[in-house]
Length: 360
Image 1 (spheres, rainbow, N blue to C red):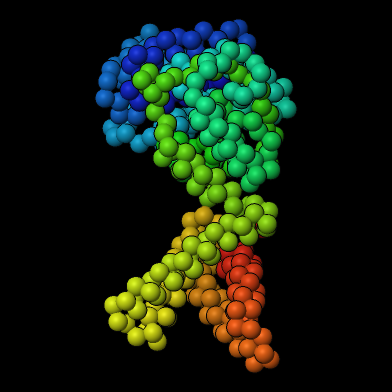
Image 2 (cartoon, rainbow, N blue to C red):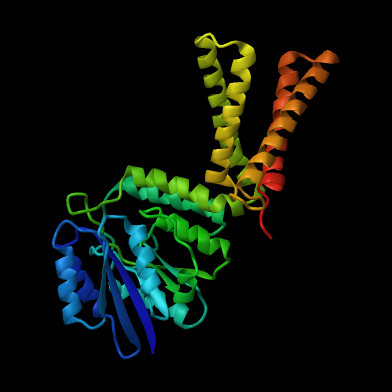
């Protein structure tokens, strides 16, 4: 007999929690034992009281609680750590997902063919409540962006229903506290080359009036998480595109700061290096936040020193290429453009292979 741990993060779900847990418990049978872990994330309603009453009535139910609201990712992180089943599934405390689908998600795991199984709301299985068009397009875009970086062909990265082998999920460090958990966990199982399966599920979405919580800010955070948790393992071309964004943002910051310093009458010989090195600092922070693995080879201060040496070396090279081309009669705009393009490629190479090399 297999044991399935179902982790239920809960925040202000007094209207649905009892029904949700009862539906979860109903899938237990002679071949499947259940452990249900409810994590109350400092609810302001009666959710914790309901969870405790469910624990008293059902031996399979355990209740953990947070004294301060931390978010879905933080609740899942704690629940995963306490799981004891062979497999671990995620179940939202609302009624958007049908626990009956979990048995179908379990099959590839029970058969030893999968490490992770993901339920897709966009495959043609089960009933689907028709709701927000732009939410649908947002989910499609986020899944597409995630697939670009992970090289997976998922149809629904943002789905709640994800089932793992317990040793797999307990071996992964989860950093995101809110809804950024979804792109983070997909990135990390993809980076580990896990065997991932996907199957259609039914979906009964809620409106915001009915308690839906995810919003635009969470979508923006998801984009950040897709880039952050995937870029270090992405193909070089994608890394180069991310660095193009970082380099462009740093260049704009350099220009804006230089003009601001000139406007307050700072001499050019002072304004230019101040703006340049502060922009280089921004570039470094964006590199370790979005693109490269921090302290991949060097400790922090050695890493900063290596980064500074690359910046200094390539700034000298930029001046030399520009000056040399001007010396043989090349137009100034073409000389600077050539030096800039060469500098961009070499800057990326210096960061990727010298300052932040991929670990073996």
